[in-house]
Length: 511
Ligand SMILES: [Zn+2]
Image 1 (cartoon, rainbow, N blue to C red):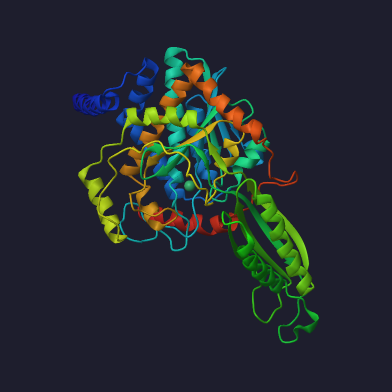
Image 2 (image 1 turned 180 degrees about the vertical axis):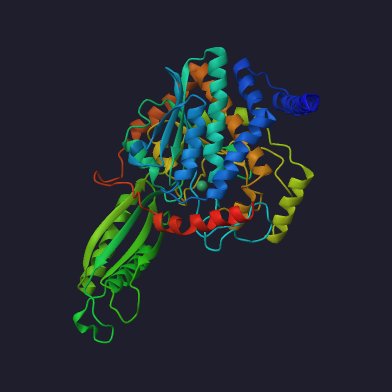
């Protein structure tokens, strides 16, 4: 028995070494790499490390917890970091699922952002190339956030190895950030001062390439719920009643007419979240949730106009605009160019993961199902992207808020099959298993190598900070959040209470 274990471990060691050195040759081909950087890249290349963080990612994928309810996901990550010797602050910035994990000492302080929230209604089985939910209507990881704070943690682990071995001066911090899909946590994290002592921040996102970019992009945004109060009565004798739903309808008609006169960079969308229960009971309460998006310069003015539409709804229907509740308010993203250039150098050192035949076959099957070119997994890393020459508006991310208080840039890594659609079952299907493991590992390598660069090259960091300071001097930062705004801790609570037991039951039955 003893000799068999010994023999197996020798074989395992040999197999691991082949893979390890195989990757090593590819990783460092043509690049001179400092010993500290070599260490983080080698450490992350170990098969057991790829597997450790791959399994964490898959576990978070199976939890599929919605924003502000990521209790299991954030705990798994915070526990893993704490067990490795990181100091972990839980419940940061007044949000139970927000954490900050730190390791090392002194300056510089380099942050890595990480997300772990899922999206509603996207439940899907992993690595199945057709729509097939785990639980009909349940949430799913359609944006790959299961891989993201996991990649951040893996990068920080590798940096810890280098700090310990080479006595490096500097601190690495993982910012576990809840509810990115509803753009909530970062403005509150900024307001709580979590980034005050941080010199630079690396953000990451799942994608279908390994790449980075810089400059201004995306829209600023207000996320806000308008609630109207009226007077109820029987639907068959409604003359004494005042319908709150009518106020929502009129507000929406008014905002839809407003569109014509908004500058074209805007985006605006809403859902009615409360509008009565039965047609024969006049609803005395109704609520509509708006995303109001435009550039930093135009979003406040646009928001005031939307408030006027709400007031018009109340006035026309004799109801009251009882509450205007801001859930979040964020700035546009302005990614740092110097940091992007540094990330790009490391992207070129790390290179695209090598995919197996099985992984390419799966990608092609998914691409066929979606009617996309059957090209398989990506083979080339991305080129450094600059900002679009014409700003036409677009989506938003609360990472924007961080880019306004500390030099910040995002690296994207492959997880999604090319041609797969973000916020769609196809992304859920491919953000699980071996391709996701390799993709997040490549992202972690780029981030860890860049933290080492920032630790070791004060000149590089100075350049990055000067670029940031020059922009901020021209555009002084001021939060869009009203002082009394609070993070909506109960967001998605009912949905998770409904779906978590059903998902758990599925996994227990299909073990
Ligand atoms: Zn996302």
